[in-house]
Length: 63
Length: 174
Image (cartoon, each protein chain N blue to C red):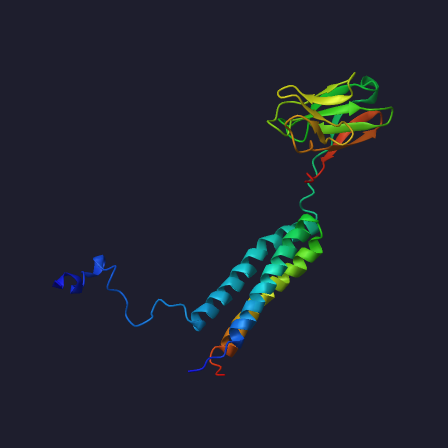
């Protein structure tokens, strides 16, 4: 059975974005730009349902 | 070979014969993807408290306002002298220094090293902690010598009708 690894790649990209957003959020907090903290915290939260969606869409894909 | 190794231990003691199918514990693609999704969930949950404290800061809840407290009368504090007071609580020692005619500096004077009371040395123009000889800059509260590494928390003061009032404690800035 040949598998498609597109889902893995998408999820890895999402995780990378999670890392970047979290880092940025924490730094913006200490720079006291609280609006940016809320924006990137929100993005981080949005990424989770996106990841679930990507998982469900790609789990049964065949190459 | 004896039969010893083939015997399945009874259930509560069965730590060895517990693989139901081949490659059961192997992390396959599906399991790996599930882990990734779970990690995204952890990230999402862990950004909640940061958002909460940021929102709190934005709504101004962190800027605590204490009831203004009279420290002393202007006429009773000559230029260059200091007076000790308590602000905001009954046990929060603080010091007010009159630097010039209209310039005051006030700090919570618990040394940021080990909380000894910092006092004002008039002829040296420095705030000194007697315990380990830490020194603080009187203009900013920043540590200039000795063990302390963090500034003293500044207290905002205002002068009204010839009396000096403590207004609020400034946010600690790292």
